[in-house]
Amino acid sequence: MKKIEAIIQPHKLEEVREALKTIGVDGMTVAEVRGHGRQKGHKEIYRGQEYTVDLLPKVKLEIVIPDARLQETVNALAAAARTGKMGDGKIFVSSIEDAVRIRNSDRGEGAL
Amino acid sequence: MKRFVVLLFGALSVLSPVTAQTPPADPAAAIAKLEAAVTAAQSAGDNAWMLTSCALVLMMTGPGLALFYGGLVRKKNVLATMMQSFMMMALITVLWAVVGYSLAFSEGLPFIGSLKYLFLNGVGLEPNGDYAATIPHQTYMVYQLMFAIITPALITGAFAERMKFSAMLLFMTLWALVVYFPLAHMVWGKGGFLNAFLGGKIPTFDFAGGTVVHVSSGVSALVCALYLGHRHGYGREPMKPHSVVLSVIGACLLWVGWFGFNAGSAVAASGLATSAFVNTHFASAAAALGWSLGEWFRNGKPSVLGAVSGCVAGLVAITPASGFVKPMPALLIGFLAGLICFFAVAVLKGKLGYDDSLDAFGVHGVGGTLGALLTGVFATNAINNALKDAAGKPLPLGLVDGNPGQILNQFWAVLLSWVLAAVATWVILKVVDGLLGVRVNKDEEVEGLDLSQHGEEGYNFEG
Image 1: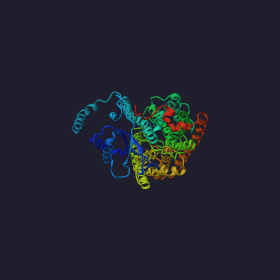
Image 2 (image 1 turned 30 degrees about the horizontal axis):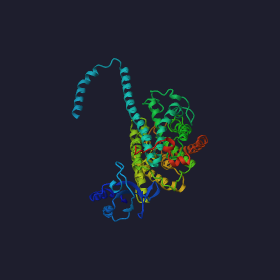
Image 3 (image 1 turned 30 degrees about the vertical axis):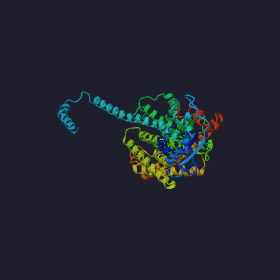
Image 4 (image 1 turned 90 degrees about the vertical axis):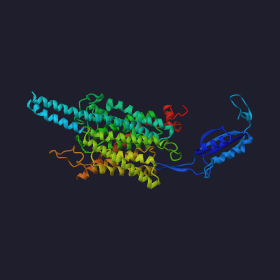
């Protein structure tokens, strides 16, 4: 099993969900997060006080999938999340040892 | 409608010869009855407007100021900040009923009233001819109360996010007793030192509270900011307003409420009230443009917070002048207030380095001072002819009427307000600091005043 963590632009969330649904990936966990990579933040001024906002709003998706589906899923996700500009985000892949379906205690890939 | 009027006149012309032929049995009694009816009608009209104004001015504190200030602080202090405004609605009301109105508006010394109206003794439904001859004395009393509420609430902007709640209550109680009630007496009370209309030594024009409300609160705010010192992390951590949206709503409520504040200060539903209403609106509009332009030139973008701060600055500056000037000077006063208060807040504050968290001084102290001085320039008896010489001829008011000395009178009144507010505030802070400590400790400040002072959070989305 592999875990895909994708940090994407918030406005790309719906497109990514659609793309994943199309290839049959329909389970995911989504969190609103803040962060930055190479993309620079922006400047805000409130009554003469300047603030540089480095941490920008992003959306983080977590998807756990069987090993066999990894490439297909990563490709679909990246294609849907891409605008071609800085700030599009990153995808991280890691291995998962086990999974448990809480409802009936299924284990491993059967629990996904 | 027109046809109805024609019919009515037709009917009257048929009837009138008959009524003329039968004069009332007692003409004097009939005239007295008519006069009583006219008086009652005027009283009804004036009282309706004054009670409406009264409610409008209370709306300025809650929700107006509470939202305006509440939006400007960080999320962890939103409730505590709103509470500071809200509590003034409770605390000052009780104080006013017991002793405040008496100290401010009963005849006494030039600098403070007496205890004649203690517990509102003698403040009933009959008008008080000295202040407002056509409305119940209690209407006047409760209208003035709303001013006494918002003035200390304005100060809370300076010490936002770091003052202990208990200390704030004690500070405000003492501040009302030592600064507000005496100053209101001096400017508006009968026999007050600065009262131009009721026997003052230095005749000052302050229609709705440039000195009494805005200079006093603004200067006290500056002293509070200096005494309490910076918020923890000031200049290093971001202290962005958590919701400019709330501030926009609050500022718009202030704009609307201010019609009660200024036009209500005519204490009648009169032409003078209309004049003050128009001036108030014009100054606010021009000031919003002034601040926005200043920001646009300096920062490259006109911010929403800037535009609404500008409108408040304009409302502040026109307050003393609102019942004395013509509409075009009102536009000018507003525009200047927008530009100058922007400069005070965005440039001067940074240079001087004090942490007036929500700019109570930059907007109210600076705008109030500007407005009070410009009132001496633009006040004219073409708008307000209440001051008359022995022969009943209206006296010249400001520079535009050929009375340049009035600017000096205004200056003395402003100076007296500055000194009283600054010295008294510092002494009160010392006393309160000794008794309770004025600041929360560092942990409480970092945690936020909502939790540390009130045990609540403003936003419970998971709830």
